[in-house]
Image 1: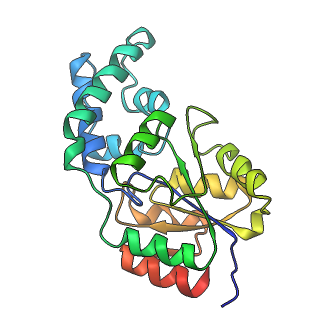
Image 2: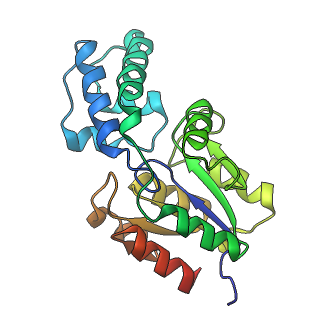
Length: 218
């Protein structure tokens, strides 16, 4: 089968990794720890995918900037305390293997830090699966297109041959900003009703649906 996309970039949290609930809860607990107004679950989930400090500032607008380092430290504390409860979504490993067999370049474009991404890739034994990755602390946070621009340059792939897969409007807006196609997944942080204005090629409601669409259309 002829490939339509040479490079497929995946968001991590909420797209490949079942971490949305823990991240949202960790944000809420961190804000409470520094005395801010605790965001709702929906508000905390909305900022998932952004760079950490950008996300925390958005979720806790009444927390003064001088408390941001403490806020970040408390978020990391709560997240790490729950990380053993996290795992890849069912079906992710076969999906990635099938795409590798079709010789797509596979990448991660995430709001995580470089350290955080490298640690979790080692934990789930995916260190050698992805051909490249970009994190918010080494480029720019979503929806800036910088992550995708850098990945496309790294692999010599044009925007029309690049596909972004993500669970948030930040992911899909980044793809729009980079001139790339996108696919949304509805099982992560954002409600899929918000996706349609950003023109994804498809919205998958499970990893199995994502797998089927990518094998047929990517």
